[in-house]
Image 1 (cartoon, rainbow, N blue to C red):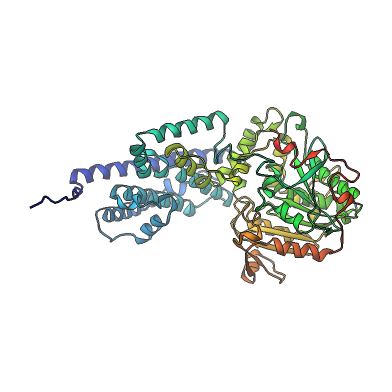
Image 2: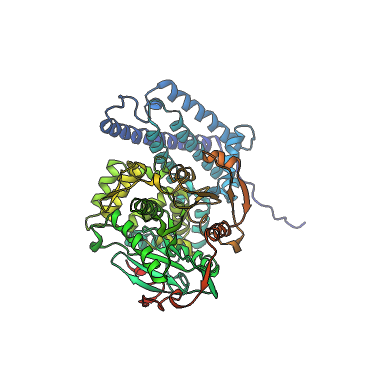
Length: 592
């Protein structure tokens, strides 16, 4: 009788094994709790020193760690759910199904190895249990302000994301498998990636050699027609026989390169707008250096007015449509208010705001970076008169640490995977420097003190401005899942401007919600034709439309004026009063 091949039966864990791993997991939980208690205590001490009005014992964490009954209850709850995890690890299904369901849905643990192996199944569920308890403790704290709770919630989330077992080689089954498979080559390759990133001072997200500005990104044909110490003005070549008489000028954020709106032929808002018969101009801001050390908000507002006047004079038109994206939208609001104060509001036919804030009373997680300590650190990092863009990039990465930091630590440092070619992530890492004086003023005067919505709270060129007097027709786009400019914060612009206004809520976030060409047939947007007071009321009565909101915006623009002219003479870059200084995308976009 032939000998049959049989797979070895995995040995059940012995009592000694179970006792050992119980000790290990219990000790890990204890260490994490002690660490958080220590960090919270230190944060509370600083808060108590910085804000004398907060009585001792009301600092974040006191309600949990200073109350023995609450601490005991937290330990009992954790132990009870910990037993449920052990039951599942040993083959039982009794326990906490909601915790198991949460563990099964977490994309960090999508791979079957996290469930099929009882040890790693226990590791991931134990981690999620601890994370859930830590985050939950923030919500039940008493005697703290809303801002303090937001700060503690943010730092706790950052901590639990960093402590995920998926981020460590010995607690990630996929990394262990890859290490055995490659005999450690993955760790050597990952080490090379890490050392390279340390050397350049920035986390790499994509293949650094896959894209080049002007070659396969930012390729829409056009010319630079004006250059100042602060910006280059690009005019794009028409592709239609006739164009709308009123041109369009786009102000991108100076904290990023403008080509987020011109990534490639299929994802370019600029190319699409040109194809719809618009004469398009874009401002390309200079990456700050020592020469811009004294640059302030006044300079950016006056530069926007100068660019608008340049376009009006070049084409011989009375006004132009303007778009402001993110922080450039904030500045555009100030520009409109200054023009209103000067009785020159007619220079702007309409204003469009892409995910821009003017009222910072509920500005989201970026408010975590405007404390006195943060402002002092920013000042220390700006010794040459400008803020290195890598620090700003790190800040934005922290807002989505799980996706933009730890995901890449795992894939590129531990798994040793090659960087994928991804144009959006290339743009995300293509940082720009910021004028230090203006950057600090922006955080202090707008984010922290919310002066832009205060009548006369800000002056430009010696003229006090009041955005509550702006009557320019306005189109406001917000991203439903925007973590940089939250939709409820963007909505507040509707409570300040006095002119006709259309609000559109787009699917996705700060970038994908904006860069969503119609051909892609992705996401959706919502509009509500009724006048409502809150975003919640807007959503409740909104109509959903599948796909891109760009056609809705175009129809709104055409409704302002549909007069057309032939695309000739000054409508072609370099053939009017302004000679072409070079091909788009220009030199400033390449500057470091």
